[in-house]
Every structure is written in C-alpha cells, then in structure tokens.
Length: 231
Image 1 (cartoon, helix red, strand yellow):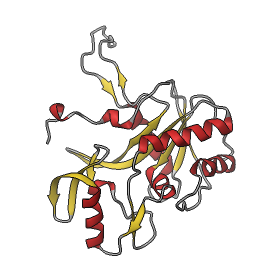
Image 2: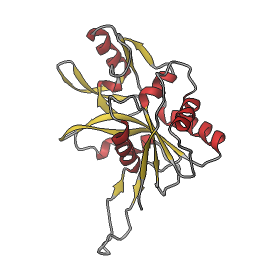
Image 3: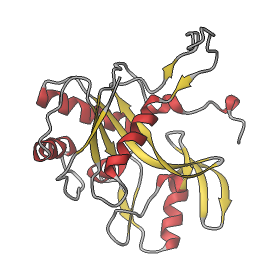
Image 4: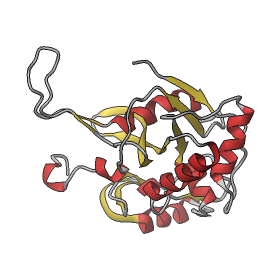
C-alpha cells in the first residue's frame, strides 16, 4: 500500500457561522483536487472551532488561564502557568486544548464541543456535494508523556475506525499478536500535518490510499482509567 498527501490551499480566515465544508470544497477546486472514494479529509480543529463560534476573548494571561480551567473537567497536573487537564471529551492535554496561536490578538480558541459530531457534519456535506465516499478527521496538536516534541492527533473522526485492532492476528513470524492496537487515525493526523505545518496557513489536507472503511470515534482512543499507569 502507498499513500499520497495533498495540502488544500486557498482556505481563508474562518469566522463564526462559516460553512466549512463549502470552503473546503472551494479550496479543493483551487488546489486542482477532486475527492474520490476512500479519501480522508484532515482538518485542524482551529478552523472547525472558529466556524462553530468556539472563540473567546483572552486579553491577558489571567483570562487565558481562567478559560483553560473552565474548559477542564479535571486538572491533573500544574507547573507554573501550565496545566495538564482532562477535557469534557475525556482528552488529556495541556491547558484543556485552549490555544492562542493562529487566532486574532486578544482571543483564544477552544476545542469543539463534540469534535466527532463536527467531523461527521463535514463528511456528510462533502459526500453530498461530491458523490464520493470519504472520511473526515479533525486534529489537534498534543504533547506526549516521556517524549519531547508535539504531534498532531485525531480529536474527531467520521467514516474510519479510530483503532485498527490486530489482536488475535498472526505477525510476520506467525506468532499471535495479543496487545497490538494501532491508533490509525492518529497516524493519519500526524502524516497530514507534514504538508500543513504550523505557520503555513494550510489547515486541511487530503490523505489518499488509506484502505479502511468503518465507524469510529476519536473518543475510542481514550484509555480507560483502569488501564492508565501514568495518572
């Protein structure tokens, strides 16, 4: 299997109430791209959140910290002004996903209220407009315990399984795999970020060649507390 990743150019600054699917379609046309069956459209949560009006004033650090604490279901760690929080979705991330990058001065963008539902809404509109059967992944940038650096992960998904469960399957040496579960939508999110970047104003991409179809949710990726060795 081989995959191709195409950036979607021409997506403007998004405002509350914008029809993001329609804007993505215009970006696809500007990028000389057409969706085909099994394409995966990857979209950063920033543009999803902006379209859904999930942007609020944060004129100083104190207001930003209050927003982060408000958006947290639970605060797990603190270090200076940084908090590691569990969001209402169940994700564990810095500052409950509240971010001031790539937003107008004096504002912060919040995570979508239900990013799986956001992904599904975009997918339905894209499929109706193009006739292609596609998937949509909504991403955010997370840090990782025990490893430096940031990586994009899936916080919303529609049209794909979130996890590829290989337990019970044989490996290359015909040994049965007992614990192997691949976070395939996180791999897609990270791969797409290679063509989007953090400062290039390219908030969407198409990943082509993923031979997977199924129903999944990004919340399927959340490790149950009884399996979590790090909290």
